[in-house]
Image (cartoon, rainbow, N blue to C red; front, side, top):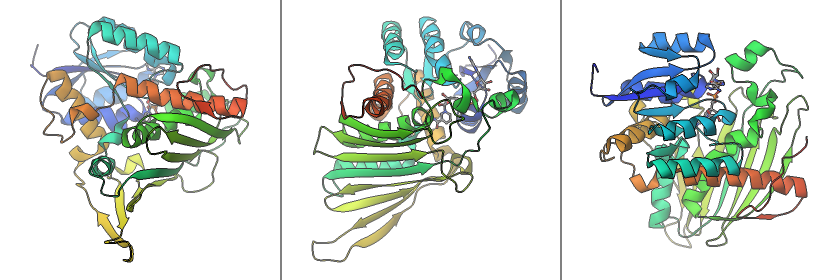
Length: 375
Ligand SMILES: NC(=O)c1ccc[n+]([C@@H]2O[C@H](COP(=O)([O-])OP(=O)(O)OC[C@H]3O[C@@H](n4cnc5c(N)ncnc54)[C@H](O)[C@@H]3O)[C@@H](O)[C@H]2O)c1
């Protein structure tokens, strides 16, 4: 071996690999991008040239079976995650896997068995926990800076074009439009985006008690939903959260992403820049010195260094965990790292939301039965 750095294999050289995983590994003094895999030659070539990657594989199984690799990033479409993760875990590879971990709880439970049996490091790639602003909110909830938290609310949309009933095949592959057109996804926009905030809500508020949702397919050219409102209630404090998410809105190309966390003594407002802008979230705290005082407003600022952005801190943490290093350089406690069980819980909330829409009722967790919505 030319170096003693961690040898990373990355599967699926598309959007999230390029904006998140690859630049972070490239910057790491402890890891090297050793191999990449993608069925699309153009994507392989682009990443190979950009990062000077020694090995490329069109078949992801060949990468997973490469004996030189220590750890992998799974950045393929949803339906490929579980089988790739199980094969990798059986080969003893450490894994960071994109959300959603799978498309059914059954396959994620199989993943959990294989991961437990092989005692590998596994991390669910819900990187929003690593955003300095969201970590700040978590720390301050623990300190009770805003008293007892009782409600969170998120409004998040992307304005997506209508590509018609049969979108061009090159667009599907080139710009990830399988999301809108491929039945293997197991869900639509909520499955794609819900796992992020369902993960944050659980991290901030604890376990979810029940789920109710209204979910629509506004654009009928899509195979699944593109517009969702989900209401969660939590076991602790009778807290609630609303998640409003859409790809059916007209608006700015990159949309908007903002929200609030309310406590008995204050509120955090957050405004999240689009991922391509590579900036931390903006957090504003509204509180009162005492019950009679006017609310005061405080803006909280965070490091803008590339190495302190959410994806970078997520990958730096994964590398530290695989190497058995302390995570002090990242400043993120290891017991807050999203586990495979957190990934399963996020998926369970998405599927409970679908079930709530299908049956038109509130669904208690744990989810007992699930049938996909027939759009
Ligand atoms: N954490 C985040 O914020 C975030 C952001 C975007 C996407 N994601 C997740 O990452 C995954 C990929 O999304 P994307 O937006 O990067 O999609 P993408 O289409 O841009 O990239 C996926 C890549 O995987 C390749 N591919 C297709 N089938 C494959 C297979 N069976 N094995 C290996 N590679 C395969 C495609 O050719 C493509 O290059 C999705 O599960 C998505 O939910 C997460």
